[in-house]
Image 1: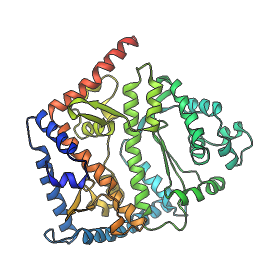
Image 2: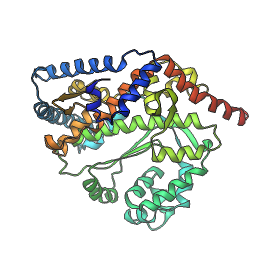
Image 3: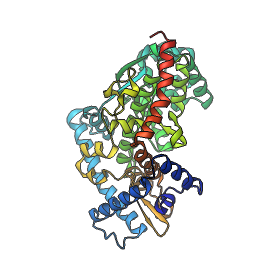
Image 4: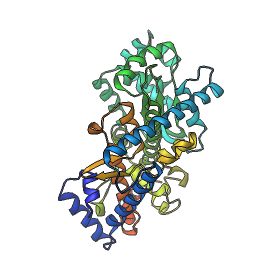
Length: 415
């Protein structure tokens, strides 16, 4: 076990060391952790050289400030690119959010999910009317609200206006949902533009410092307008978060497809709306996020796909790296490709090279002492687990966790 992994992850010892030792023993002691650490260090050195820095004497603080300047320049180019797209294809206003939505719509990336039907969502809204949202948007009756706003936008307004207890009561209704209430369809990317929505979203976006609402179970994402005084870096942070949300929506859709024959299907819908779906893998000695499993199989098309048959098709298992997609929109982001799990550890101080961390650090004007590294640590841990998921024994463990339940439920459903 390497010091780099332990310190970078801020891992709890000795539990972390013990867990890695069990993984190594289960896979014949391949020294995966050591090999992975070497790979990460070499990749960090390559990125440092790409920034014009000397890998031998670059300090953590020096790298942090260079990355901030890099994200400043890249964000300016991305903002200009999105404004041009909006002015060319959407409207003359050159709105950066409109450019964002257009860019995402035009990408060749998979944008389908197994999601709740609009008709089923309407019924849930009627049973639990969002009265505060209705008032905020100036509607006097629920019928008028449902007639003039899409069900997804009504949900977005409710999430912005209603109380936590209302949200809890609404999601409790998911327990009664069945697989027949869902359909395979294109992910909805919505941008409300009316003056009513401008008023509702303005103060909330400024207060919460983000403009996105992603509904995994609805297969939809809502883009709210950004304030005029949005700080530099916000465009990159917003678009990167949108791409992260699309991956979450795709993963939730495939997980729900796998669960559609279960009699307690509605409970899985409720859990997905609130949490990240996970599987229990005995050999990993911990729950494994379904997103990680989806990514594993997306990166190796066809391998192990029989574990999911007949519930998933090969094209359902899609995962698109954020940095790669950003580079397809604005080529200057090619620098960030492959950096999600990279970080420089120097004298006990770690600096994230993750794009999301860098963008959030920049737009929030965080000092070196207060820098964030959350997405780096999450990605580093995921990458480490992926190295073990490549081993046949662990793949079989995951298949064992899935297949008995699916086979049993298929028999019970009479299929």
